[in-house]
Every structure is written in structure tokens, then in C-alpha cells.
Image (tube, helix red, strand yellow):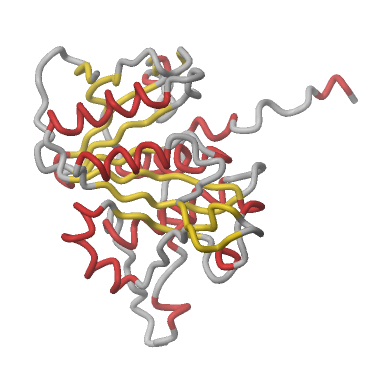
Length: 273
């Protein structure tokens, strides 16, 4: 359940809830880090649950020595009323057999807080794509029927590619197609539960592999920004009208949080050499 920092109530009616799935490469979590850090979103509360592995650490978005001493836990909530945006960041893996209880608790909070829609940032194993999914962009989206009615036109304008369904019995029969998101963590369950409950939910995901997933995070957050316009891509004032000169690399506009310096651990001690 949601617990405010100051103990008071917060109104998220009409807000967009942005959150990650704990999925392959932690791409969704890294993308959410970029959103929180760039927009300087203040922490407004915690999402208390026994479904995640407990953890505590320093402030991942520290900008000064003083605020670096602040503590963070496994699930925290950030809000930016000016953009009607609330973000749930998840920082630890799920406890075994706790996917469904978490989804139920989360969707109950979404309904009670009257969030307008939920956007789940996720990822899926690149090596498990079928032939159709190998074509074109590695980015995909899914919309619940409730949300599709309201945003379908805009999504079509963006010319995004919907996540394909794959054969339930590959190599045997292609007649039955199912949604398959290997490495996606809670993505499929949360999406199907949202469909059945009439929740307005979108899933944005990227096919990737484990490793240095920073480029994947930038790719996913830029994909999100095409829709939500969280940061504005300013055009160059140059008289050169070529697209390369007009629009800068959007990845350069996102602020990398201070915690990413430790993404791959500390360097090797010089004493070893």
C-alpha cells in the first residue's frame, strides 16, 4: 500500500502512473531513474509491500553531500503535479510466488487513487524473438482495451509497432497465438489483470540482452518521451534544414543519476598491479 512521507493524504486523481517491471537488463528501472533524475521529482511516499526483497541504501539521486545521506528503500513514489505524473520506482527483485499478490495490491491502489492511466516500462529477451519480431525496431507497445479507445489515434500517428503474439505451439501449429514476454517479469500478468479489470494501461518494452543496458534504457525512455513529451526536443536555429541539424540526440537531454557511477561496482584497486 502507499504510505506518504509526511503521513498526510495525496491526490493523484487524473495522474499518469509510470513504473518499471523488474525485467531483463533492468531496463525499465534504469529508464525510470532517468525520468526521476531529469525532472527532479521529489519523493512523496513509499509503496509498502511484502512482495519485494527488502533493501535499503543511500539516495540514488543525490546532488549534494547533504542529501546523499538520505535513505531509500525497495519501492518509492515520486510525484510532479505540474505534469500530472506519479512514478513508482522498484529497486529489488520479487520474492518467489509473490507476483500475483503484488499485482492485486498495485491495481487496488491505482483504482483507489483514481490514476488516469498506468504506463509500465519493461523489456524482453532479444534471443527469444520469433521471425516477425526480428524485423524493424526492437521497441514494442501494448494497450489494454480500456486505454486503446482513448489513445489509439495518437499511437497510430507515432507509427509504433504493437507487440506481436506468437504461436502457442511453435513448429506444430500456428493457429493459436498467445502473448509471450520472456524475461518480462510481472509484465504479462499485470497487463492481463489490467485488461480484465478495465484499467487504462500501456506497456512499453524493448528487446534486449543482459549486459551494459544503459543504451537500452535511453532507447526506452526516448520511446516514452515520443508519447508523453516529458522533455522538449528543441530545434536548432541553424539555417541548415537537415533533420540531423534540427533535432539533437534526445539522449543527451536526460540527466544521469549519481548512483549510476556504481552501476558496475567499484574499479580494481591499484594495489593489485
